[in-house]
Image (spheres, helix red, strand yellow):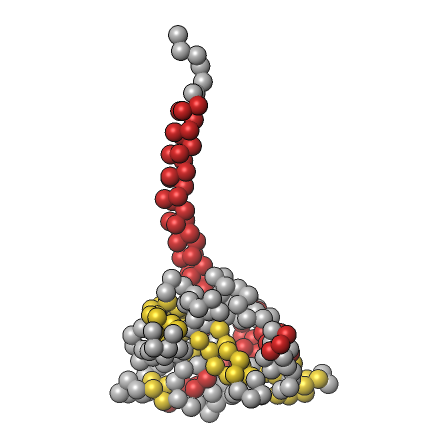
Length: 241
């Protein structure tokens, strides 16, 4: 009569099968989790699109002005688009993508110099501190006095997109943005989420450019660019301001 219980070989076989199944299912679970994060990111961008619609509606269809400095509470502050839209979103969490929620510490970027992980070093004023982390660069070509009604192709002209700002110029300042993250890849499975001027949010594929040695937009009016900056004209060309 066979004794009750499993033999060592049977246990090893069960463990091996479980390990194989875990190895097969782990990528599936990882992709499902990333899809959920991407959907959350789309929701954030949708809220930013609504906030921009409310802002332009309150300001004769004009987009916010370029960043400016102003004394607030006795201290020089740097006011960005994100600050101008904050009264409409009322939550700093809307500015962060769950796939990379702390990609840019905006308070550090504004207040600290490059050697301390910042950029502006407070020269133009310190952060308004309405939010801390930031994931969505803006299309700088839409600065005031650009009007929504003046855009030739609002359905193709970007407003916000996944990415991160870069520090450049002399003195250093957050002047440009890239679709590639600091680790060198786009945020969402070789692509990014983009908000367009007509309020729609779409997924935009990216591709690696050997010539530029970085990821660029794949297809559409912004094809081949490191970012989605510029106003799309009637003939599909870009007007950069």
